[in-house]
Image (tube, rainbow, N blue to C red):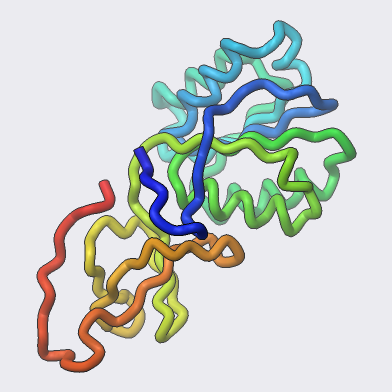
Length: 199
């Protein structure tokens, strides 16, 4: 479970079916189980107005098969996050009033998809989220502005500038990332051993 620590830290709920003209569901492999659980609670005709956008590394895997069995109106599998975000932007450009958005999976997926949804002008009240899977973080180095995905250690070495970064709980919704600040700014010869804390 994600423990909220400061006000900017996102909190997540459990996906529940909501009234709407159309339903757009976005998940990674970890979030596919949340989509399956949502469909189990949804009205019988929910699938007729459901579009599922999935980021999956294995099109023949169990997660992809489970989503396919739901028989949504449309199921699109994307090989990676950039492809999914591009496809999502296209779908949102054509979406009309009354669309409900469901985001499920890891924090990087939820954060980056939410940023695209908000930029498309969808009101936050139409967005539901559920965290599933790894607690790995997307981190921005506040010094060089570079981003790193799948960060599991505290501290982490910036992949762009090489600084040792303390990963703060401060979360930027605009950037969909946690902030990393130099942990040894006063004495960079001081080495703080990394420990895996975001699993």
